[in-house]
Length: 511
Image 1: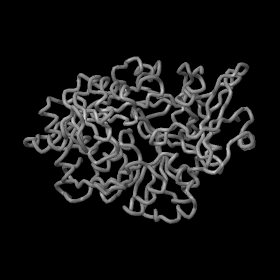
Image 2: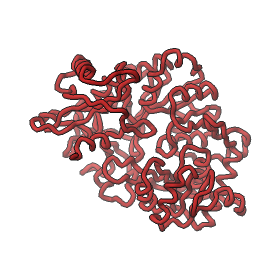
Image 3: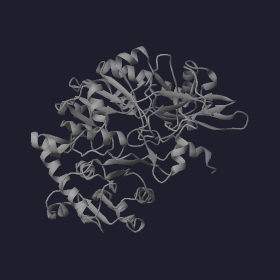
Image 4: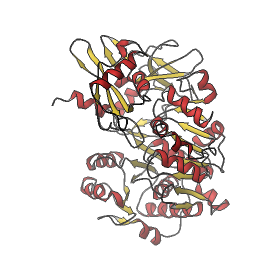
């Protein structure tokens, strides 16, 4: 299903509402405006398999643009609005986009890339004027009759670029018409979480990321209401849950931490009893953080582990997690294989690279066949890995240890930063933490923690000794950091994902 079905059945129901401003789109408006822009794109010469690029903050127009592309058989490439003009231009060019839609709030970036993106044939701006761009509202008003919907389009999103340039992840286009069958995720999520059209979904993360974009699309396809936060704020999320009687939300663990760090009286001020499902993903969740959220919200927490590549996914609910604390669940799409650096499969309990097996290659990196090949197992091309390390227990539950790129090798011993981070993240004097490996002349690498202290806490040698002792009391001494640096703020994406490579580069780049 897609918004057109719901526009006919329930035209005045809210498809999307902005959490702070209250701006909203009904299903009639979403269907009408997305159909009009689909016609605009068709008249501009875009055909099935072409790419529409979108550069925007969280706003209603993102949904119109997304569904215009999906109902036109196009790829939609949502671009991180925090990137530099050069980085944005690279993605626009690499994707092969023929049309670009931008928010006027990002006019300086949009205008800066005009000369750098010559293959763009049509440029549209919404929310205000942008030099060199057609006005979105004007082209909608001038468009002719709506077209018949085409076979369904898809997202072509870009990885976060932790290793060099970001990689475009190109999924195969479905063959069915957009109204003939739902996206694969809809029946899967309906079965997994019991979703219905009566649900209200809170999306607190940037819409340009894969999970927020796809989950919002699932709830539109279902005919439910999406509440979109302009940006995440811990108390603001609680306020939105109470105000809109939110039933389902998806967050990342950092958002949980920020809410848990609110004063008790602030957390108690808001009624969150409407929630029936709280999903978290995108990064490992410390066991203590998850347990505290279960104590607060009840046994409604669900976790999944997946990637923008869509090569595999695992699920785990609260009951299963209580039996397997720290696990991200069992695979829902195909077997999981844990392999060493030579590709040899490892037995249960041993740490290695996590591969998912599928019947065919589920994705390819756009314009980068060598990177696609690097993601494939050397002997089984339908097994793919995206760089996560972990192990599987005897019951088939997956446990992640860290990203392969961030593993620390000190004196020949593997150390996983996540283990140290999980201990420190809820220390009362710590607001945020990252653990990295830095060069050591004797051991190769040594463990360093970089800490953002809680408000009102003084940083210095005394706190460094306290925190190192706190860690050494809880894990093997060789895993504890040799030193701790204190910073004003750690680099994170707006979704809360730690930019560990950015942080590590500060220590590896000569002054």
